[in-house]
Length: 306
Image (cartoon, rainbow, N blue to C red; front, side, top):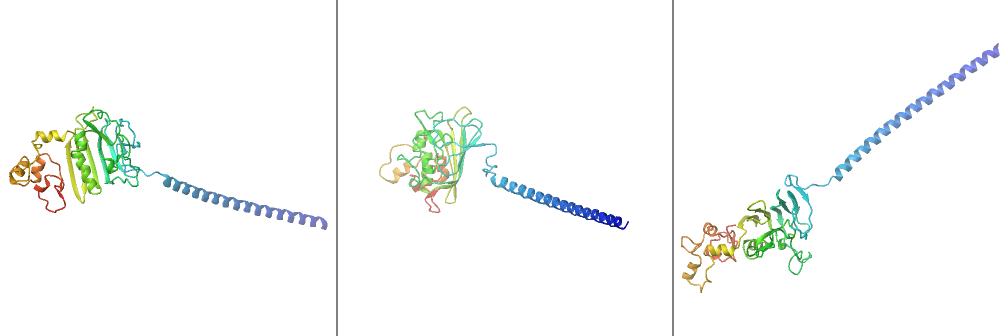
């Protein structure tokens, strides 16, 4: 009987020890599960955070959305000779790293060109041809086949412009080579560049790529300049205004008075800005212009009407 009691006590103690062991193992298992769950959650959080950071970092920088609103930004090779322009697009027409933006309307007409800064051509460090151009030819915009129209740059090679259709318009040859267009380019070159440049190009209708007029606004040495001129032969305009008479003879008071008589409307020997504009001259009048000696340069900076 005593032995049976001993066996019974031993059996009960064995059951108790095994039960405690299972509880402890279960507790350890639950604890490990909790730790794994916490670790997994923390890992997920770190992974999500890292992914978010990568998305933000990889988002490409967009151009000024406000400036380009309503236009599709496209890339066109600077030497592309095609005369076709896409409608409602904006294209960088600056050579190299320059940012000169050209805009077209719904008819594919080049209507606006802007640049924060005009940076002159650098023929020492840029691949400039012996002709002084970046490219051997210009885009064949419809109209340039005319004998009296040039492939006219809105921003010239010398000012850092390319030669594709988004920088070319059919322009009167004399205007482009010797008239207001050429004069404006020379003024900017002489000043070493310009800032706040804007060109507005207008057309007689929606069917043509030949502009009727141009308006250029730019800043030189802190002075805003506005040049407006029609896409016509300036020699013919001057002839119609009586400004292309015979060459002046020796400098006498009578001949001098005769030379400026069509501009100097009050006959006092001095030409005002108002008189010069009324005669068809664009401002500013610089020191090398034949009218300059007859005008008053109050700040003596070599320009009148800037």
